[in-house]
Image (tube, rainbow, N blue to C red; front, side, top):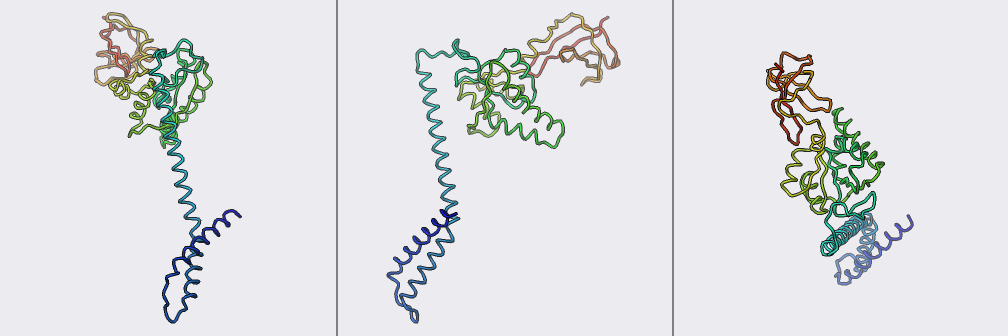
Length: 305
């Protein structure tokens, strides 16, 4: 408080001195005495300086903080750029995703795995991490955390539960062996979260972990490597071939009113042609065709004769 009062007095003196100097050329204005007018104007400017100090201090403080933040951002960006440039120019630098001498819990700074919101909410990334199939640095961008927070604050109970579960997944990932979770707080200049993820992955030569089909397609077109958890899940599911017999319980109707739908224990959808009247029954079927995509695997069957 003493410092603030002292600074207010200093600003008041500066204003008063400025007014006193400039009123030197003040002419006589009858019936007022020239000296009286100079003193009056000087005092008024001094009081004005004393009163304006909080507003001026606020403006100066804000401008100083913005300037410092801007300088820090530019310096850190330039340092990162120079580091990446030196790595690319180094003839001994390897572009392997995981160098043989990489320590457990870390990989090259410009080759991280980047988690998106859908992969966090999905939750299977935690099970994969616990199997030690993943290791190295996994980045969670701050804008992904912001999006996850919006989901956690949703008025919808299911969305809110998934968002909160997402934060629990991140905390559990920190305990997984062989990986290190880092929050990346430098936000790329882009409009959408997907665009920011793609731009970040390009800048850091990273790979995106997702379950989002549309992000998968856009990132692939943009020459960004994507690790789609759905693709991984499909790859380890039971492989069915046309002509193979399957036992399935028809759970509900399909999109076509004539179709029945069931599921394998691993979650694979089974579509039973002409199975609409078999809902609730466990039947023997024969595989007719298999449809594979990043959105999942569907097996089309017909009832065994």
